Image (cartoon, rainbow, N blue to C red):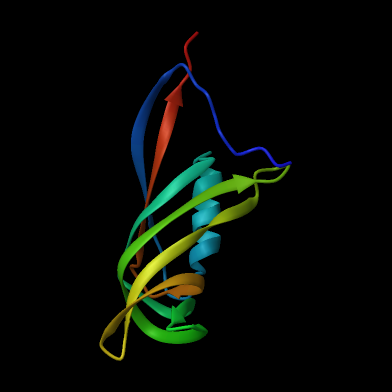
Length: 134
């Protein structure tokens, strides 16, 4: 039976934010993974995506149908997601990213499965930095 992921700490925790600014054509998920890895962040919440995605693949439900859609030049209205780095070298990104986008003028809540950035796209990650007691 798999054990749930949890962590017990007795030190002080401070909420912090990492802002990633992407260039045109950069892969959103690879940038999240590399940003977390470089800053030694094991777990983070995606709080916002500001700007536009040049390409995006999404999954969502439309009535009783499961829909896969590929979009171009799309703005993300709302975002929430959680990621953690797993694996022997903490190099596997695990989690999901939910977004609200407009399709034909109608807001759609979907799971973002693939995305590339336009210049200046910002991704805001929130994480807790734990200061261990000595």
